[in-house]
Image 1 (cartoon, rainbow, N blue to C red):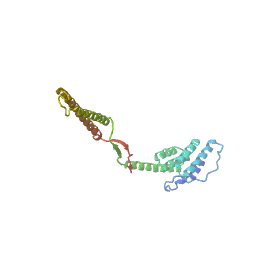
Image 2: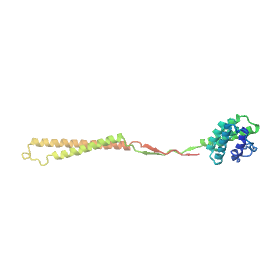
Image 3: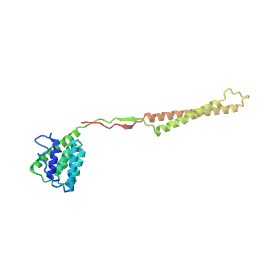
Image 4: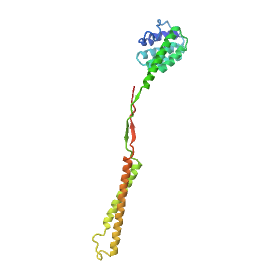
Length: 248
């Protein structure tokens, strides 16, 4: 496919889709009807034309990214197809990618162009520069909405440790308390139930159990207080977050 043929095909379909471009900076210069192909014997040119025809169909269907892929495939077979390069810039513009479009326009400007083609491309580049600046300005004005973070209180070793200790101490207190009650010499009669020394020994034993029970209950209370402090006294930890929203 010669550059002239390619240009006619592009102008008749792809570029015509940009007819809404103001007259003072048209997307392309008017083109004449496509001349007959004279290089069908060149497999690369034939392949390029096939890719380009597919690009026209995709472009007409609004599938711009796929159309760009087909144009790039055509350009690989027809590296001198300057109108393929120009149309790649147009498609990138349609995709809202002014930076990519500028890359293709610069490549087009580096080719051998007629005066009208160069003027058209330079006007196109100025439009892309304006679009890029507008996008950049919009990004600078973005307002970030604070991120919403859901939090919950941590239940970890600092909570489980004292809580477990409190449980063990409570059980010990209950056992020791029961022993204190069961060994207490209630209604003990000296002579009938034993000697005075027996009474003193049982009393001391019951008292020892009672003291042990009191110590165990105090330890249980301390364990509960410690576990409660670690659970309620620390800052809740984040568990899930919602992505921040942005408002232009």
